Image (cartoon, rainbow, N blue to C red; front, side, top):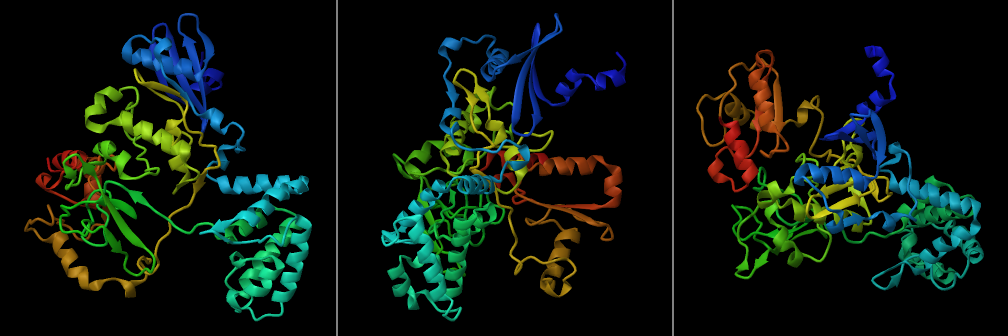
Length: 503
């Protein structure tokens, strides 16, 4: 067969989409991913040159045989989460992954448009929605859709006569008599806009209007961000492990931070605090920081909630089938189990990018890596997480423009630090703050700033730079990476990366 004929061959296109292959003579089992979120499994008989489709369980059995040499299905715990979501509407296009709220709004508005009875659940929600026992939207004066429409028309006519900035307290009594509570807005203008949105939905539902209206309803009253293992504080935590979270762990031995305070008000806010809960053992409070890979024994008594998962499965290749090899160091069996339960139990999963959910054409996403996998000898997951589920939503991170600005805005540069920065970069005298120096200030700088974590691979960047004479000739490299002394770190991976970096 000619090379150009091979490229047009169906089997070649299968190979292009292959993510992994398992060779167990006389077969080759292949996991095929034709597009993000979609997986197929085939088995090639190399002697007969035949191809058969495999079920997920059959493919995972190949992986188990690769590790253990045999597989006895009679004693395998097989997990399938698909039935729990089978009746829930989900998109089918890979491009729709991560747009769950948008999809649900389209689905709901479409049902409303074709079936007016579908408006009844919306009415029921507006009548029963409460906060702290107080009805937020509609009271018992409104019983059906017809009464709702007429009440909205009367309320809109009344509000039209008021100044736009009229506070809700000044009109609450009259609106309450019509059937409306305080959740429609804090001013006459806001209340009028919300009511007109609902009127539009009742007359001609469309996804954009429905999304805007639902976004107006007060439903989120408390937000808690959990980080059970890291240093989270407002000062002196830069470069320390895992510095994110609003509800976090209390660490008595704090290394000069405020992480030993149980409750700390966040500066510049009125209603935001850092709450720190300690890890407890039979011998009392755990006083020192420990790696995130070692926190699992403490989580059950730490908080009755879903703890944010680490998603380490795709960061450590083959960590599922060879989980026993890593168990003493990383406790992947506990971690992957917790990840699986947390992801399936969550109502919403918010990510920063599409790639985090479903990767790209050639790379598997972090969540997608939990679609199907096996921990040989422990359990097999035939349907883990469905990345098409509308619980997945992308909210891209923003930037505080009072802190960040474009390089061309020279007036806002912190020029007072320039001398100190130059000293760090170009001073030949070494100290605890910097190692090495830049001998040619005229070269542009490649700057990378992150903690020395294996997954962030700053050591790989340094190695690449060191091996490329052309790159060294053109640019300088500056790494801002936290500790430089392995004795100051207590994180296993960071210690290994420091040693590798300093070789």
